[in-house]
Image (tube, rainbow, N blue to C red; front, side):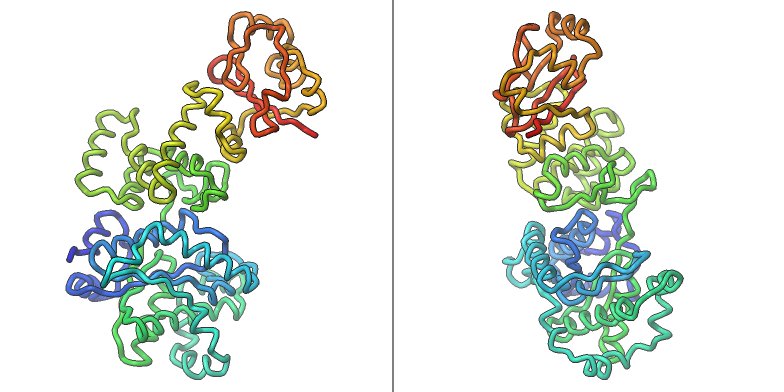
Length: 428
């Protein structure tokens, strides 16, 4: 059995551990769990750190449990939050739980024998608890002094903390106790912001039954420039669901990370071996312009989250902006991917009725798309073969643009030279 803590430490994935945790994990297979609150209908890349912890534990011979908080998700963890979450309905939570289960199966093996992963939902045991029973059987074991001493609570006391959120710590502690009692779970892992909640669980296990359980946390991931990890440059969250973040945009997020971030991220988020990563680091040092780390990272994680086919498609789509694509490539793009690729380029509108009648290319490029400031300049560029519509060069200034040129039934891509793009959307 491999030493999972040693492996995680090399990857920069260990912040804190309880005393004796490393010795226990190195000595025998242990059941370990991570909790995910279904507060959205998809996991995001911020959840990948916790997921990768489970992956490494399973690869080292331990048994992972992924707990989806169908009950605690109705409250929301106050850790790391400056204000109270919006409460969600039970139906919404149930929907999100099912979505999470499908996504987690892309990472951990639920059919691998003795250390096969398990999925559990804390709603299954917390729904039977009455308030009075919970206060009597659980609440009396942790004092208010103990709970308010936690950093996650202290930070929120300054801005206001409802009793609902304050109780989250106790509920999560009971989850650990329930898994310890019913599943033999002896270790909980998570982000460093979860340390207070996790150790509340180890304390509850000790106080109720005199048992011993352990905790391991991973540092919170930030970008080298100080911005929050998990969002695009535009501030959008990067989701694991392809309908919420396209595979192309997902791939681009990892491909475009800085050299400084790539060295950390490839250890944390990929399954490449130490030797493979060290080889890539040498390549990066010798030829940084080739971005060996970013390319390897983007491939590894895009294939695991989506598929090999989606990865290959993302590479193909990425070539569009560099002129290495055809009209057929454009026609094969979904509307979302098309908008992702040309996010930030100038966009204009044109009436469908005008396209149905046909618009002269010079008028289209000056009055509709505003690619050129004057018709004279448009004619000169057309004469020199420097204008393309949907990646096809325009033959001359007498061409007509019609609805036949529409991509996805409502877009036309105009191009001036090699790198200047303009997206025209049809209205009506």
